[in-house]
Image (tube, rainbow, N blue to C red; front, side, top):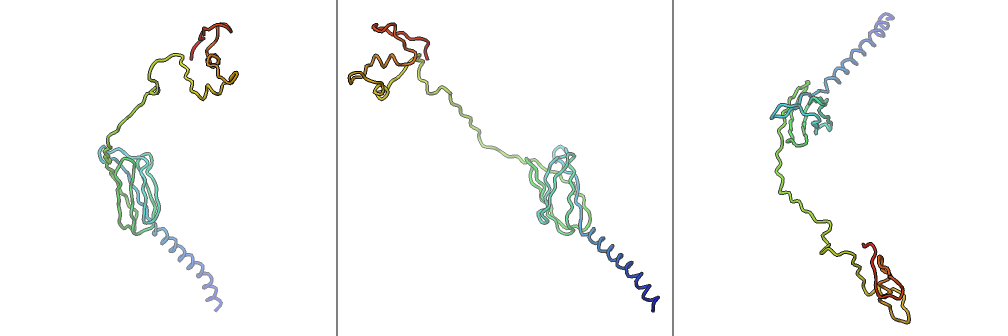
Length: 180
């Protein structure tokens, strides 16, 4: 009886390790890898950066600089979307229980744009004529100047404008310096 128990104790861990290995193998086989190269269908150049998404399993990857991609997904059904800017999206779906190699050739998408209209405006569009050193005064500005004996002195208002300078206090002439 002791021998029977001793042999059972020694055999039991060996049996449990075998079942553990079987479980590990089944986990390995539950995942598959789909890989391949993605090229341009017209000239055969490898396309770098193509997005590969398995919509069914919600995983994705992108192609490397050589156009190679590799995506690991659970075994069974897959639905792969290959997309790249300027190219038509490709949809591949199927079922696999083993690793799979898929070579993809993408076709450029031709997009016709509408008419492009370029409009320009002159920066000096609001200028109507070549007037030099013209100062325009409205009534509100004139009324803001301090008045003497109730009346606004129009000559004094003109003297206060920038660039205007009198020749003398009693003279009637004005001279303009510089000019704005």
